Image 1 (cartoon, rainbow, N blue to C red):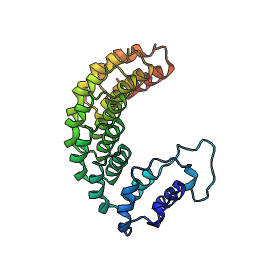
Image 2: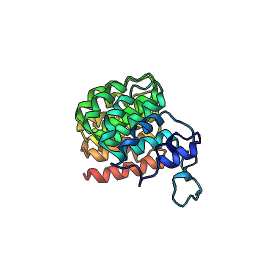
Image 3: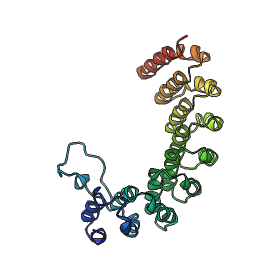
Image 4: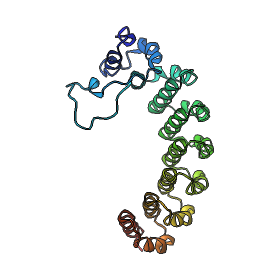
Length: 263
């Protein structure tokens, strides 16, 4: 099986790497070969990893050997940890990105410091994946590094960072997320509103009420949800006004929020 991971055919490489019954805690000899696969971005149909091999309408995105190698390394478990940390320094961005994902999925708090450093990677896709991994690890030690990443030049990184801060759920991030409600990118503003609702800190209420007037309807809807999640009666007037919003999704979410506040 290890030899098949080195096959010139990407279908074989993916088909082997996704074998759950093969790559488990007893498969540590395969770790070097799987690490070597992390930079392999050759696309393969997802049906390769289905036991019945049938392709369904609306199938997900293609798989790559690098992605499946990362999943296999996670299934092997803690023995993969040190090789994955080393892979964060790989010269190929694809390998670094897959390693960052695997470290988040392994759920080992020792990964927090190297992933914090990876937030400064030269490739925005790697930085985005590192932000996701830190959110998945849910360790408050990463909050300040993630707060700094809310100023990243790439909107995709800022959006994933806002999610991570909401997932960690630490009030130390509130001020930075409030500032992110004015980000130039609407998706970042929407994710910041979600994160503030997830953190559930009343210090965000005034900024979220202001976000009910955002130019983007999705941001307004998410702000209404966040205000309902926080449950502070100071939001009543803004939410009542949002019942007249031009977007039905915003009106619906505002009605829910008013009910959640229960004043």
